[in-house]
Image (cartoon, rainbow, N blue to C red; front, side, top):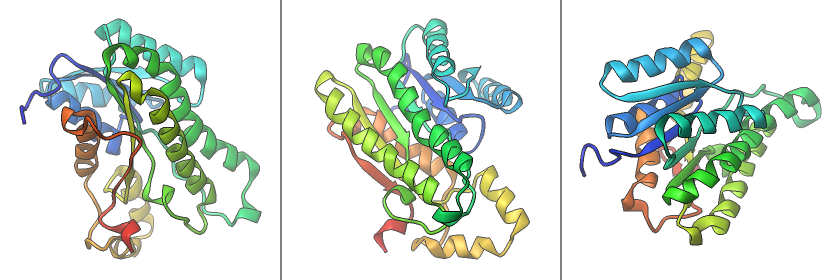
Length: 253
């Protein structure tokens, strides 16, 4: 595999200011792509693009609210304006949902999670596809292992991730014959800032998280990013509409 297998290509990654999103953006840049870093957090987004540039990559930060159509359309347009094309999109942005039983779920919390985690992916694809159709590229949406199973206390999160898979599979059927492969990854727990913050408050959770994954540990963000780039590579040219678990065996139990 060439170290610069994505040279001359352009990718955009939502939620790329930190965690898995940053790992995806960084890996695209390492392998030669110009990358649009899309995030709502200005300080972290700028820091992410600067870190990639410092390492010799090409990255542009664009602030956007992925749950807002106008904001997402503007972000996609800016990526294309600055780099001239769009080959790949990783719709990765997400939030941690509150833990609630269904009957106790506040309606505004349900809407918040669905708006960001599901509608955000829809809006991403809606505005990315006209450009990616021109380049015959790929889209990878971040779902979750919880998109393949239920998870007590996280009904909004689970519902949004199940929705991402339905959306991904439907879009794959619509656009596969036009040369665009659309897939989803279903990560297990990865060592991100969000997870570290939770462990700071409840250190005892770390062993619980390890025990959830038969492989006996949680992932690094880079391990999740590798799956995304594989799905965008020519090696996955016959892979379309898949929900790929990258979860250390979580859903195999």
